[in-house]
Amino acid sequence: MPRIRHGIGMLAALLVTGCGSGIGAASSAPSPRASAPVSVVPSSSLPSSPPPPSSSADQPSGSRAERTLAEMSLRDKVAQLFTVVVWGQKAGAASKENQARYGVATPAQVVEKFRPGGVILFDWAGNVSGASQVAALTTGLREAAARSGEAPLMIGVDQENGLVSRLKSIVTTFPGASEIGKTGRTANARDVARATGEELLDLGISLDFAPVADVNINPRNPVIGPRAYGSDPGKVAAMVGAAVDGFHAAGVAAVAKHFPGHGDTSVDSHTGLPVITHSKTQWRKLDAPPFREAITHGVDAIMSAHVVMPKLDPSGDPSTLSHRILTGLLREELGFDGVISTDALDMAGVRKKYGDAEVAVRAVLAGADILLMPPNLPKAYDAVLDAVKSGRISERRIDESVLRILRLKEKRGVFGPIRTDPGALKSAAHRKVADRVFAAVR
Image (cartoon, rainbow, N blue to C red):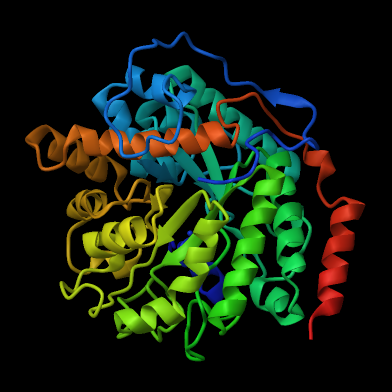
C-alpha cells in the first residue's frame, strides 16, 4: 500500500498496506480476553427513519448502521469513505506532518476536522513505540471521533506478520505467510490469525489489512514474495480461508488483498504500474481461488490492487479504478457484497494516469467503498463531494458504500464500548502458538 517516507530505504518499509498499506460470518462481539475499560464511545439518540435504498438488504431495518446513516449529512457521508494516516504517538501531541497535510497539529484534531471513517497506524508515522502508548493513541482517536460526529472511527493496521509487521516488537513475533504455508497445515494459519487478532484488540485496533490472498507465481515478484502463503492456488486458498476464520474468532475484521491478484508481477506498484496478461480463464484458475475462499468464509473486506490486467479490462486503468474488475468481477461474478478498499492512493501505480482528485472519484465509480490514504485528503474529499453535487456520482451510490462501512463497524463492535488491555500482549499462549508454527516450517 503506502510508500517509502522520510528516507526509509529498506524493502520492508516499502511494503505497506495493500501492497504492504482493505462482511464476515463470525461473531461481532468483542474478544472475551479484553478487559480494563479505556474508551467507551457514547450512544447518541438516533432517529428511526427508514434507510435510503441500498444494494445490501441482508440486515434488518433499523439497525444501528442504518440509523446512523440516516442522521449523517452528505459531507459526513463522503468523509466516511476515507481512511487516513495521522502522525505522532499521542492523540493530543502536535506534529509538523499533520500541520502540513491537514492544517491542524494533532491526530485528534485531524479526526475532529475531517471526520474520516478510519485511521491506519504505521510505525513510520510515529504511531508505534509501546503497547500502552498505542492503546492510549487509539483511545484518544476514538474519543475525538465521538466528539465530532455520529459514526465511530475504525482503527486498522497492516499487521501481516513476517516482512510486513507494523507493530514490530510490541506484539508477539509470529511467522509470516510463506512460513505458515510451508507447514502445510491450515490450522497454523487460523491460530496465528486468531492470536494476532486478539493482540490487536488489546491495543484498540479492530481491523487488520490481512491476509494476503495473492498467489506468488512469479519468482521475480518484488512486492509480494514471502508475504503470500505460496504459489499453488488451492493451497493458498485454504490458508486464506483459515486465516479469515482466525481473525473472526478473535473478533477482528479481516481484509483479503490484493484483488484481482498481485502474484504475477515483476514491478512494484508502490513505484510503478504492473501489467499482468492473464486471460480471464487463467485468472479464474490462478488468481481468483483465494478470493473466492475468503468470500466463502465471510471476509469483511477485500483490497484492490494497483495493477493493469488488460484481458480483464482493456481500458488500461489499474484495477482500483476499473468498474469491470471491482464491480463486474468482484461484486457480480464472485458475489462479494462486503467492503471494497482501495490499496493506498499515494502509490505510484494508481497515480500515473489521473490526478489525485480524479483518482478518488474514479475509485468510487469503479465500486470502491474505502479510499485509503489519499496523498492530499482535502483535494480528494472535495473532488468526491463535488462529483456528488454535480450528479456524476449519485448520493445513493455514496449511501451504499457508507452503509457497508457502518455495517462492518457494527458487526465488529466498533460502535462500542471498546476496551484495551495492553498488558495482555505476548502472552504465554500466544508465544506457544508462535513456537509451534516456527518449529513446523519445512
